Structure formats: C-alpha cells, structure tokens
Image 1 (cartoon, rainbow, N blue to C red):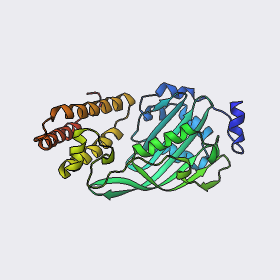
Image 2: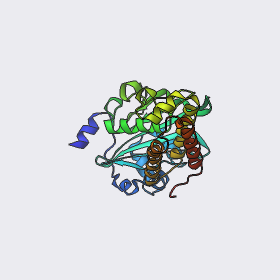
Image 3: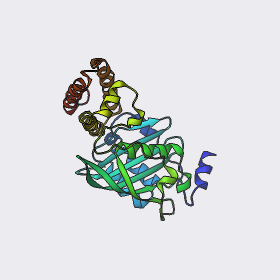
Image 4: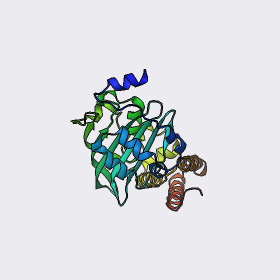
Length: 276
C-alpha cells in the first residue's frame, strides 16, 4: 500500500529500493556512506538523471554527519575545493525513496563575515512530485539550509518525468530563523531573558563579541563531520553559557567580566578539535 501511494504522486515513479543499509552510518560522516559500494546504485535508482552527477560529486567533499530521525536519514556535503557547490540527500528507508538537492551559491561579504547567498537550488526525486514531498524531507531540507547558512535565490524541482519546474520554497519550507545584524549580537534581543544576554544587547562591544562567537561556532560546527562530535560541541557551548552567568554576578563589573569571558571562549573555540 505504501508503494502505491508513492507511485501515484508522479508518473513513471521508481519502484522502492532497499536503502536500509544506510542506517549503519547514522551519526558517522557522510563521506563514509558516500563511498559505500551500494551508494551509487541507490542514487541511480532513486534520483532523476539531471541531478544525479552533481549529487554524487558534491557528496564526495567536506561532509556533515549522517543524521537519523526514525526510518529517514539526511546526508550532506560540499564539493571538494568548492564548497559553494553543495548537496543534500534524504532517504526514506521504509519506502526505499529519496529526495535530493544541490545548491550553487555565491560567497558574499556581509559585515565582517562571508555568507553563502543567492543559491540556485535544484530539488529532485523519482518517488515524489513537488507538492507531495513528505514533511520530514522538507524539514530536513530546511535544517540543511539553516545549518549551512544559505539564502535561496532560485529553486526548481525535477521529478520522475525529468521535467524541470520552478519551485517556490516559501510554499513548502518554514521561514528561516533569526538573522543577526552586522553589529550583533548573534541572537534576537527581543528574546533576551538572562542578565548576561541583556547586558550583551545593551553594550556594543559585547554585541560584537557575541556575533563573532556565534559565527565562529557555526564555522566549527559545519566543519565537524560526525553527530557525536557535534553533540559534544553543542553541550560544551551550552555549558559555557551557563557558567558565564555564574562567573559574572556583580552588576558593576558585569560588562568587563563578560568581555573577558567572551574573549576567552572565542580563543578556546578557535583551537577546539573534535574528540577533545
């Protein structure tokens, strides 16, 4: 019955393919899954030919971790020596189906940092029509765009009939999260609850340091290829935020104290390596 539902969403849909082997790689590097001998055959069976080669190529470069949520998996990486060309793959191991995306982005300087902007996004699937892409796949796609800090300029969908049609992300994807201003901080001050966060919002030097830390954390996270290491990094960052509150209790010295805390944290994070 599940296959009949899939097949009815687009003409010439591909039959289910066994993708359960990919579950072995949950939490590990996408590169490990990419070079499994079964991967290329899986991609050829599940993806439209127009998107196949870019996905194969881009999944071979600097990777993210294989993320698992129930029977579905999300993999991502970018092309070696050209991380403006990126790839995303979502696998449904229950139904043997896939949704893939490639992005070609411009690197633009915004304030003091560089961002991936004006990305040309191509989404492809032989199992689903554009309007029937499952919610878990869309959520994983949105998470990938956010994780890589990409802004979509144009988007197209390629289905089982190999026809390329315009795709409006706003119809399918949730709005992106808060985007910091060039002056910082890295979070939305309207949601500031702690005394430390309020001080950061009120003091320009602290706002700038918070933005610097926010962007550095994102860079380090994107350069971390396994889920356990990303989890460790997130826990370490949260621990620092909690300790920051305890270390700077005095109102009169809070700004100077927080400045020292931020500078020390930025230095430590800049020298952090996975599994340490």
